[in-house]
Amino acid sequence: MRWTGVFPAVTTQFSENLSVDIAATQGVIDNLIKDGVHGLTMLGTCGENNSLEPDEKLKVLAAACETAKGRVPVIVGVSELTTPRAVQFAKDATRIGANALMLLPAMVYVPKNHELVAHFKAVADVTDLPIMLYNNPTAYRVNIGMDVLEKLSAIENIVAIKESSADTRRYTDVYNNFGDRFIVMAGLDDVAFEGLTLGAKGWISGLTSAFPQESVELVEALARGDLERALTIYRWFMPLLHLDAEHDLVQSIKLAEQIMGRGNERVRMPRMPLEGARRKEITEMVEKAAQNRPCGK
Image (cartoon, rainbow, N blue to C red):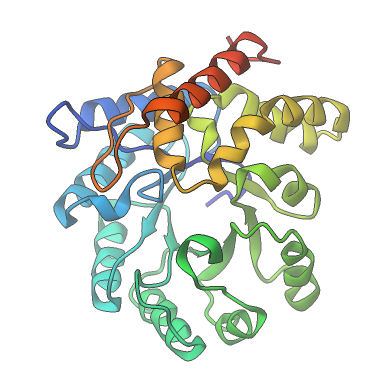
């Protein structure tokens, strides 16, 4: 498992009747790989994990692994209502061929710390895959604090953290408390540059689905020490990157994909496609960005 580079939070594509469109999803994946991304994050927020039925999740994951063909690693989200369901999905993902798990707290219920630790440990116990914990206190009302990480530090296959809080101090706090014990991945698009410069090894990115070349170039510019080039791309990208912090991020990213000819905007309820002034705003933002791309085609 290579925890470096850009890992787009891949969208799940739907047909007109809102059934999962496996062929279209595979097309999105293949194009992202051809555009140079370093890995895939399947069935996260942008993948509409919690809008899919259990069998649909397995089909999407199998299709992703089939399409990746070992060219890049595949991380898959484990986002379930209960611990037993999370345990079962982890077993299935291991069998199907995922390279790593992105493990979320159980959905809806806000756990106490000992319950959060128990949930993570239960999933880690049933797989030998490396696990990345997903810290997103704004969306999921759960913060994976230093005390929780301390209790999990002895579990060998919990190796990484996707940091999606807006508090960039977390990158330094994790390092100061644990050194290199946990790999940290930048997980919120509009503080990705800050995270990468503070020690994140890679970027789990939403807007990469619409603009993969710029995302890859930003990370690679930082890796080679070209701060000026990275800042140029980041400043161009920022209006769109802010969308990743909004509650309608999935609809916005899918609309951006559609405008850029990389997918369609269909979503499952309770989400609905953007309308009115918001749709006009996002469309104008994407079209403006497309006219002034610092790289890509």
